[in-house]
Length: 172
Image 1 (cartoon, rainbow, N blue to C red):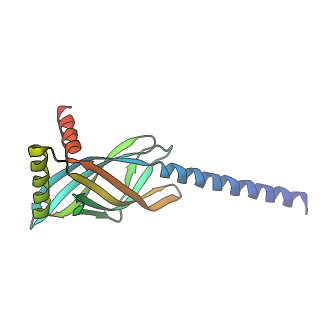
Image 2: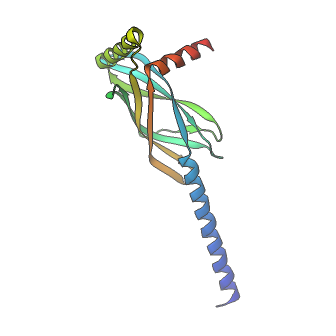
Image 3: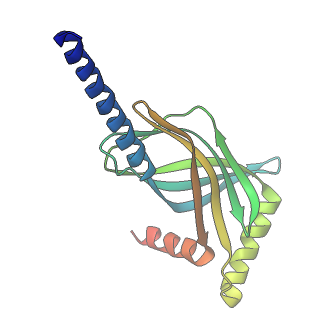
């Protein structure tokens, strides 16, 4: 083996180690991606189809922007799916080291949504029974050459927490 061949082989090895380390670091940072439920808003209905908006606060702890490329989310009340938010081709950017409130538009059955929503509020105000609400599904996230197509989202909250959030946001 010649000296140049050994140097070339050594450089190739360093490049492979560098790229591997970069990809590993980026995948670990993507795994540290954080989210929290903010609000669920009834936007109205048409032909017994309700429009809902769920807002999720995503926190990007990485040193680079993260892009949400798509999502498939179910909105549940008392473990019953009341709405579905699906978007396969989108670009929602969360800047590096920042948090962003991302709205997700969902379609739902109007009568089921209103029945469960009113029932949950009555239960809470009459005897302080907490109802549960959840958003479950997956989002696609990407940064640079690293992407995760089915990053799991599983957020739960209660009637009391939603009302407390509503009170605090209306006071500010």
